[in-house]
Amino acid sequence: MRSGWIRIRKFKLLIICAVCIGLSMEPSATLAEHQMKQQQHSSTIQSQESTACQAQTAIRQDRPKSLSELRRSYSETFKFKGPEVKQVALTFDDVPDPRFTPQILEALSKQGVRATFFVVGHRVKKHPDLLRRIHLEGHVIGNHSYSHPQFSNKSVIQFQKEIQRTEDIIAELIGYRPRLIRPPYGEITENQVRWAKQHGYKLVNWNVDSLDWKGLNKEKVKQNVLNAAGPGSIILMHGGGGTGSNLAGSIEALPDIIHELQAKGYQFVTLPELLDVSQSK
Ligand SMILES: [Zn+2]
Image (cartoon, rainbow, N blue to C red; front, side):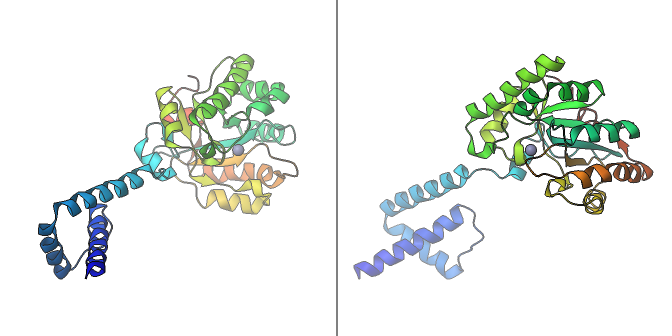
């Protein structure tokens, strides 16, 4: 008898909690009636249920927000595309890298296109002249951390240090602190987004991924970009890589990508132009 009653209690608790936390489970009329009768029996049980429901809700609230939830909650700070206009922005990550960045700069210069380069602090320290060159050729610099960690595994303090260390190096070389940050792998936590918002940064991911870091050939890189690009697109490409990286396909694809999108009426702009923000803080 007692164990039967405990089973009912547990079952009831589950059902009410499911309703309480908004799961799609709906009790039948019979179960609802059963619940109402049971509720009249004990206020102690009610308070236990309430505590259990609160705990469930707290667990739900503690679950880290996904990137798309963060983009929705912080839409003014966390961008992945621009407005629906006939403009697109090329962005190059993991820069500077003497194996690839100069070739990208030459391709862009030939086409008369300006882009946005997300630089890694420790690479800038090794190749300061390349950073100056990117800047002098009219491109925009964004911050891509100092050591390229996955920020979702880092604290707000560690995030802040990575950003500030890199911007100190950039500011010394080209005289401004970038407003734009691209988190490595596009990963970031809510507390880091909040810190970025409070300090006037814009976080910028992408909505078109060339997947060029995989060492794809020219045709594949072209397809990945041209099949997905549209009004306000932010296109992710790479201007640097790790040991053994091969961005030849990406560099070869660049003139065709530019010509084909221009032929469709798109204008290539920098991220500050696309998002209507200043390049510096
Ligand atoms: Zn990166």
